[in-house]
Image (tube, rainbow over all chains, first blue to last red; front, top):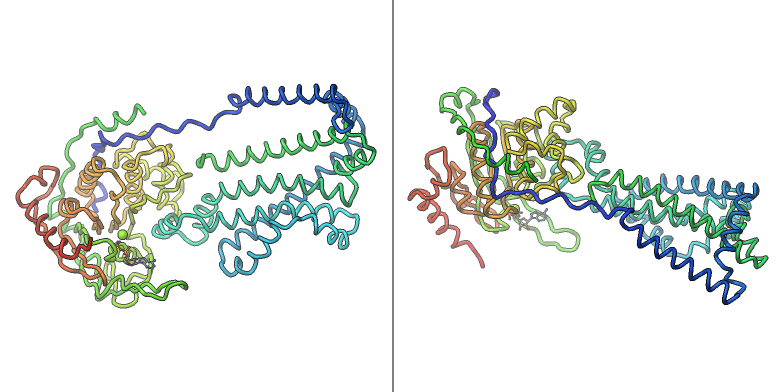
Length: 273
Length: 286
Ligand SMILES: Nc1ncnc2c1ncn2[C@@H]1O[C@H](COP(=O)(O)OP(=O)(O)O)[C@@H](O)[C@H]1O
Ligand SMILES: [Mg+2]
């Protein structure tokens, strides 16, 4: 091959037009009017129903919001929010590391999958709440119990999605990399991991939602700290307005964590829209 | 999409045709690819115990700078043959030599162009073309510089930062071709590279390939199921027969080069194509 061969430019292609880049995903700003209207209508309905029906379990929204403001003003409530958040962050971090590692091993090695598949699937669908007494017996009232509950809620969906992601990486892509002499480590870093990212991130986001549920469940049923404990206490006092106010805090927390996860997801998987 | 037409309307002087003397000077002399009695069986997986005799006693020599096309009914082992030469799968018996050395795996002397393009969907055109160089540990600046040259060669200048899904099939395979050329292999292995591309684009791609091959005379092993394509491109056509996969016949294509569309209108071209069809139709089970 003559190294100094001239490089003529191409006689490309009258019949070879590129498709236009796809329209970007519908932006939040464009969705917002509908969502905003729907939220407004729901709130109005709630307010009217709460005022007219006068049911003890349906306080008007304005009352709930007032309670929300009061609660947020209280030092002890803020401490509880922080405690919940801490359990969520630590529990989710454990789920993430454990879920990604186990999922990746199951996806990569058939023997690991065969060994663990049945447990992972059973625990994914089992009502996790059944396990809470077991954790209580092991860890008592300590943080171990709260964190364990968060982890069993969050980890299995991360495991399963990660495993599926690795298993479904297009073999043609791996073969291509091998054909170009890529090492096993290079293929994992530059092909397997990026290719699995969309499914893995979907699992991470599902896991995050479940982690919030696990956090509240654990706090309500065993450890009596955090937001779950607040909700349980107001519930036993039949103070429905405050129960709803706490629920709102949880909702906001869930929305914010989901939003953060979405941002990370978008950054990592922009190509797959 | 304004830049598409800019690239396509450009005219340029024909590529210089290397004379035989300069090719001989660059040649190492011996055959580039040699298969000696190569056989390959695929064992059935756990659910089926049947084995497929994909290749049976294949012997074949490809000389340097030769353009060989392989044609035969579906399932006759063309892809298997290519993957064995690429070093992607092992063979059961016989010998596979590339530049006189036994093939034990993929190597820098060979590059593959895939029917499915096999581009990384998250990587830009530039990154995809540079991928082969990246696996070889070439630093980023250097590999991107080389990749840009090849992107220009295949007519994709201006598309460097596009993602594959924003390209048509023909353009995606241009990326596949540039990626293979970027590692400057001695041998190009192409498995129905234009099989997934529409007819009009495919014809353009054939001309492009001939143009590029004209001044970078790689040794090419090119699988196709199009008879026109097989004859238009090849110095020799390997005709394979199925069950088990065998070399049925090797047909010389002594048509003059450079070739183009006008080649297809010549009597000689039609004769060879008809000969090929006569031989293919008897093994074609419909
Ligand atoms: N990985 C594989 N496992 C089992 N059988 C295979 C595999 N690859 C190919 N075969 C079989 O080998 C034969 C030849 O396949 P292939 O080389 O793909 O044919 P072609 O490319 O000519 O259509 C076919 O019968 C096919 O089913
Ligand atoms: Mg094939």
